[in-house]
Image: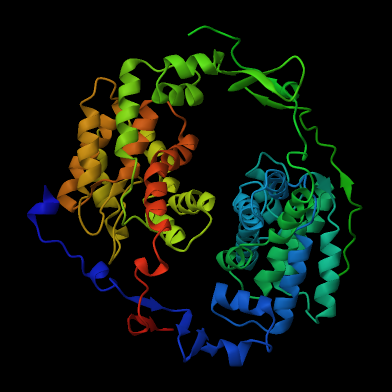
Length: 274
Length: 275
């Protein structure tokens, strides 16, 4: 076969063997710990917030403190201790069957790699508003942007970041608007566009912007890409999942929504012989 | 801040199911405790009877497909399961298991850790669904013609360095044709239960060989899963399941060794380059 007949070029892999080249940083025993050219113990510890370092590691850029403070606030908005929420439910199930806090929290976090909720829709939301901004700059009106987007979904207002599932309205948007105002942020291009889309959707469908739409537009104005937002938010729901884990871990085992046999609606084949 | 009227938050009153429904497993409660199952049935068959009369592979197929496999299907699935049982000690998912093992991570976390890495889109479970869909989409076209067209039309996408996966499930590995998937595919293609997609994939793989590409293990798995009737969305999880024994075995092998039993790159070989 070809792979045994010809000498193959494996230099890409050969030069990485037994060697790590890091673009992020590292620990040198007796010297120091480095992170994106910062000496972590001298430049970062006690001088920056934890969220600033999270963002530094995710993007390679140390953001100004207020951007990190905004991000920290939005983490509170997006993770609540309600065990009915899908990722939190997993944490509670971990608690009731005595999985560890780490395993249960990580399992709940893993669940947010989801098409329906969690971080992936946020990535889509950022991508949408940035594409919409490109359309606006290309001469399209807000109305045309909305009509075009709705046409992709059979005329329905299914735009990522708008028309919240489960409930109408979103209490998290005014909460984050206040945070942004108190931190001294202005309303810039993407957010202005998002408000325009919100008005158009309210007029046409009585549907408005949700926290995804607000967050996506705000972070686009701060210069973040969809992938950067996804990476920063990797453990977004950890706090709420952990809370639900703890709630059930401290109660008798298997008492979280216990199911009797007949609580499952079996709809399959009737009893049959082999 | 621009003025915006906020909607009052109200429920959409979505109607959720009263109960979980399933077609797979039936638990019949005992007479004196509604939480205790007196019998368990998988797609209608009693679990204890299955234990006594059926093989693990038959049971595995029944669980997912709803009916017992033919002997040909059973043989094909069993041989694929053997072929996929361990991705080998160099695979990143196995190394994650070994790292967890030697790091004294809780034993119950070793498998989830490695399976999470095995979920990757590069030679991992994340690539299987795409490979199943690719072969299903092109199954009626000539594999040789498709390969030749793709080699021409996608030539500009060939990366300047690193491997090229020209189609989901097919490409180069470490700069050459991966031999093990091709050998496995050849064996499986010779079985009486072998199906059309595996045959299609073998021809497609052969047509890529001259460009240093061919079957990848995820492609072989995808072809057989599809031929056995599994829906593409099942592909990722099935691939993880079938590779799990090897991941766990390698992880646990390291678990009783000292933390120094695996390499720790020296400071000298650890280079920071921010550019």
